[in-house]
Image (cartoon, rainbow, N blue to C red):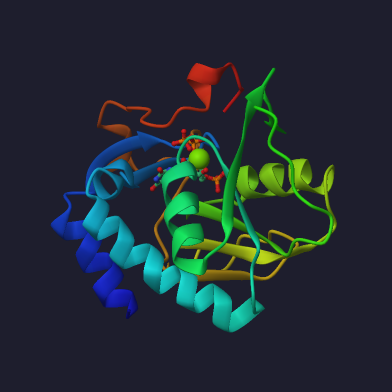
Length: 197
Ligand SMILES: O=P(O)(O)OC[C@H]1O[C@H](OP(=O)(O)OP(=O)(O)O)[C@H](O)[C@@H]1O
Ligand SMILES: O=C(O)c1cc(=O)[nH]c(=O)[nH]1
Ligand SMILES: [Mg+2]
């Protein structure tokens, strides 16, 4: 799947939102990729995650476990794992920190892929990888649908992305006037889980 085809899937799903958004990192952006508009359509999700699974397998070889950060990572993590013939588990915030809960375990010999939905600064991905590191050192890499940092986010492990886009994001005190003129909205879940943006 080409980068243009990935963007076309987001556009067709109505997932390319324009406005003034407060991102999980606290950065502000005129564009928000509402991945849940992708994930509400299982057929579209399967198309994207099949392509992601193929790219991840080509880069990292056989993968046994996919681990993703809740909430946004759960659906693409599950579907990518299904396409890979791997297991799918997720980490979720407990007291603000990602933890493997619900009795999930990762066998020490399992080759692990971290799957994220969207990457902006890479903070959520790094937090997810840190929580995985408490269970295994067998992480082969990471994969995401869209890396909106255009390759600038450093996860500390190799990353494959279905699309790399350069989408502007600004600190709150450095907004361009046209963005500052719009009322900000905060679509993500980090702040409602008691984690400082
Ligand atoms: O690269 P980053 O700067 O960390 O931003 C990307 C993260 O932000 C979103 O999650 P969010 O915390 O908004 O919660 P969600 O997964 O519940 O949507 C998205 O799902 C990524 O996890
Ligand atoms: O950085 C984020 O929080 C973020 C950006 C984006 O486009 N989509 C999303 O779900 N989260
Ligand atoms: Mg997330």
